[in-house]
Image 1: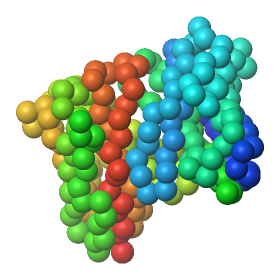
Image 2: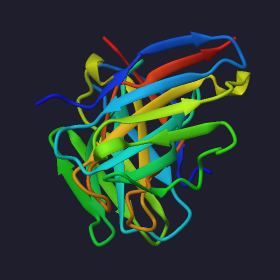
Image 3: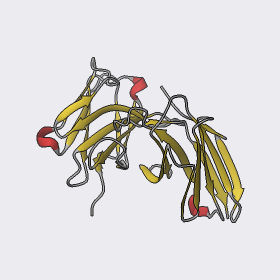
Length: 111
Length: 114
């Protein structure tokens, strides 16, 4: 079962533009994480935001969390071709390490 | 520091054959996870180990899937017999401990069942 749903499922932009991906989830959470997966590779952890945080930054990444709406967004600013990948949000409702992933957003950044 | 190592990277087998996947987690990581990822989907947890103990195997189809983590380090995931619907990527991940720790993923094994 998937806890999160990402929107859009696919996104295509030009290099230099910003990319925004959204994630909605169903149950209460302690934290929400974003992962990136390049084609044919494993997932790489990008950022974790806790339920008492509203916004977090890491380099060109900005994540927001709205627990009242059970939603999160990932913003990648000044995108690069190397950002082409699938992006997944994941939650751990029980804080046990059992991550529940969304279906992901596939981002293509055209040079 | 080496990341999570998985082998093989690719495996093609006939249905009803057995298959095994191997995972070596990051040194010192007590928690190990096996995930199944179908095409176009996010990973789904199959089993989670704390050291050598399977603490969550509720999603593991135990009629054909089995896993072990001897000595709390390397782990093996087995399917016997494989079915066409088992074609997917099998990901291994590890973390220092459970809970909200960041999980570090291996490259995965892509299984094709013919």
